[in-house]
Amino acid sequence: MSDRPAATLLDGRALAAQIEANLADEVQTFTDMFKRPPRLVVVLVGDMAASASYVKSKAAAAARVGIDAEVVRVPATADTLALVALVKSIARDEHGPADGILVQLPLPAHVDTVAVLDAVPPDRDVDGFHPENAGLLSQGRARFIPCTAAGVQRMLLDAGIETAGRHAVIIGRSDIVGKPLALLLSAKGPGGDATVTLCHSRSADMAAITRQADILVAAVGRPGLVTASMVKPGAAVIDVGINRVTAPDGTSRLTGDVDFESVRGVASWITPVPGGVGPLTVAMLLANTALAAELRSRGG
Ligand code: GUN
Image 1 (cartoon, rainbow, N blue to C red):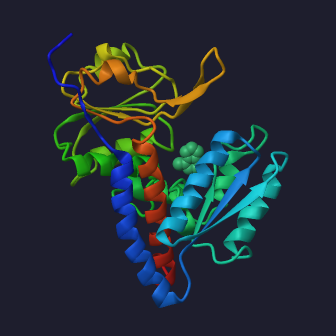
Image 2: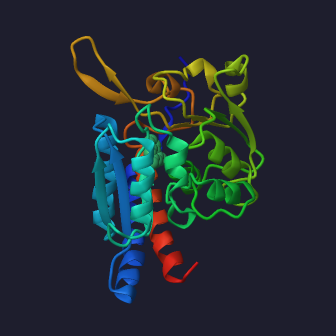
């Protein structure tokens, strides 16, 4: 055991509440001006418990800040053509004004996810998944930044964790989190200017790489992947994983990709799961929806 004090907890719930309070004012101004609130339409396909629970959190958070959110539920049997047609009809405002459109992932295996996501017009793509938005982010002129990546950067900025010149190691190369976060942390400016390494399932001797990280982000969805021996003393450890694990007695709980109890003795900052990055992802979605409404009202 070291005599290092346990890591400071990065409280995502408290920061998300602050962001929501600021957004509520912005949303009120929009609503007064345009005589309607910003509006988000969420497509939920099938009845996966995790997706249903995330969508419920998103709708509840939208209501708290005055954004109107509608959830369009579709049976798991819907095929690619039907889903593309649905997204296009939403984009024609046939389900009411749709400033932001979000298709909750994952989609059932028989669906071509890329085809469905590409049907979301880039100016309403509050997830930031459309190739146009990914391209803008890669060129340092982001419009909609994928919500989880934006939330991680916001958390680092809020906690005063220096990124400039530091080594950030991200585990996981997904289009949703790992890749956009690598772009954000390596971009010029506040919350950026880091040296970034992106690790993945084919990385050799990953622990040797993660031990060099001043900022270590785990975003793969494998419970307990990051253990204390993989962490540099004093690092900031950000856990993006949300895994439901079931104990032999049938009870289940949420846990991240980081072995929290061991790592908190080595790191200087650590995010809990739940209550870390998750609430920020939702807050960033609301911010993107407010931005989409404002951009659309200005005609661009
Ligand atoms: N499923 C897990 N994370 C996300 C996300 O950020 N956006 C969408 N649309 N689906 C998800």
